[in-house]
Amino acid sequence: MTGITTRLVKDLAGAGPVLTDGAWGTQLMAMGLPPGLPAERWNLTEPDRVEAVASSYVEAGSQVILTNTFQGNSLAVSDDFDRENLAEINRVGVEISKRAAAGRSRVFASMGPSGKLLATGTVDEPMLRDAFTEQAEALAADHPDAIVIETMSDLTEARIALDAAKATRLPVVVCMVFDSGRIKDRAMLGVAPATAAEELTAAGADAVGANCGAGIEAHVPICATLASATHLPIWIKANAGLPTLEEGRVVYHMTPEEFAAHVDQLVEVGADFVGGCCGTNPDFVAAMARHLAR
Image 1 (tube, rainbow, N blue to C red):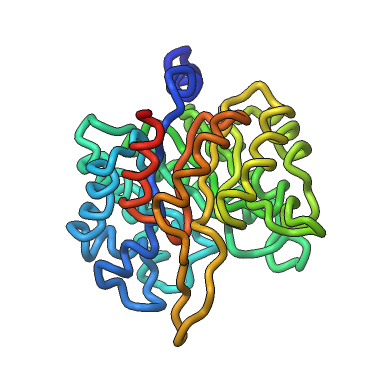
Image 2 (cartoon, one colour; image 1 turned 180 degrees about the vertical axis):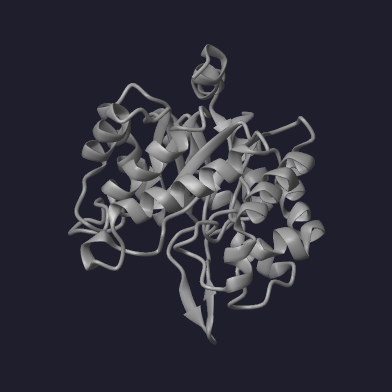
């Protein structure tokens, strides 16, 4: 890596806390994305609607926005159209967010999990490596500012994705989901936050963190543990509390102000990048921006 790219995430964190964006999937559904249709396909078929979501986060105050590429790897997609157009879906996803950012926000390209588990034998490490390498190279082709590997439940898969993303010479943030175990502070396969932070730091991540999973209040102790286990910047994007199922719909009841009220605690225990995941929207980002400006 060049010195400039190596320093990017650290420099942003040093001037922080940095406000990231909120959920993409629910926002795209609000724009008309049909249930069951891969959100990433809209990069090619409905780019204006995808750009509207990205722009809404920029207008709300996000200093970093992601890309509509979360499931843009060959193992996560199931449709021939998506598989055949995967490189373009990822490249255009970055292009859309960069256009929306217009120099006002940084663009970190999103890489999510494969949706397969090594433990079940449905996928092996070379398959994961090929899939993540293909996606990382496609994302890098349109020059995002960094890559965010998010919503990982398997530390081995996270390390493989990190290796693939690092090969692009872009800064890489790696986030895992900690919502399992007796007190809901472990990844699905039992990995503790401190172990994840230590191993991902050693593997060359530029920042580590947690996203999705439990609500924002549960991320405060998780954030503190991550921060105690690494010298790297910490990235936290929590859900808007725990949802309920009402008339077949997943409903989040936490308000933007209730969510934002926890941001100060996250920053106090070590969060450098803060944003929202499932159940959040531009109103949540705007509420966080008001809190951080106090």
